[in-house]
Image (cartoon, rainbow, N blue to C red; front, side, top):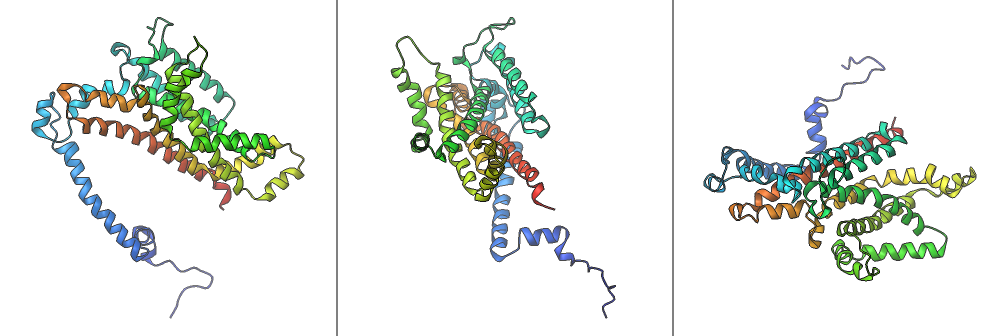
Length: 364
């Protein structure tokens, strides 16, 4: 006999709540998901213990030489202790490496502040002006008693952060303009944007970097030159902007026609429509692919090695060129892989949190 009082809900079965319910709905909801879960667990059981053994069990943490590392096997932490400054800062003068370290901390702090919605106010632009000035002073020097260091000696993590930060900061607004131009009703503007986007997306970044380093100086007036680092930065911006433009264009096409008609009915100008109604919705839709572009851009900065710029990857390669530590390339590349993972994973997690924040108005 059912003794449940009228108007009251029955409690769900225990197998549908708690840990068991979560596992049933997420891991074993179908035969295929069950097989994939078991396969993933099997791979983890094979990989994780072996990785822990290689990184923390086999190594001799007291080792200080390459010979001691070769005897014990496992990850050579002595190599990291010996070469981490070369990998992180490249050939920047050894006694002055506190400057790129401080510049990197300031730059990362500014990026973190820019990700917090409370800082999305006009004074954020002033913060970035101060930050970029401080980074320039620290890296170049020549003022305030700091020794001048030419940018040919910049390298490692600070250079990677500078290239990726400036690349994202300038490629995003440029890409927005290209996306709007491609959807323009003016044939000339639309044709220029289409040709640019298709041309840039049709070639790899390597070719753009090569052309910016080798071909561009040939077209400049005699006696006029552009710094190699600046040429690489421009190539990265132009390349990323084309992909941002196509991504944003997809978001603009996903906006219902009624939104445009509603904006017209309010008597808003074209730029008011874009700024207040259309672009906020379009950018919200394309957050995941935009973040994918930014993550790819951060990793693609390693391609500047082909034009002789001493980025993080080139610094890792230089660290294992030392005859004493030759043969420890695994240690070197695992070290920079961990750095890339921390930054890329942080960007990915931030995009997820931003999506959740912007979706709050869509749920009750």
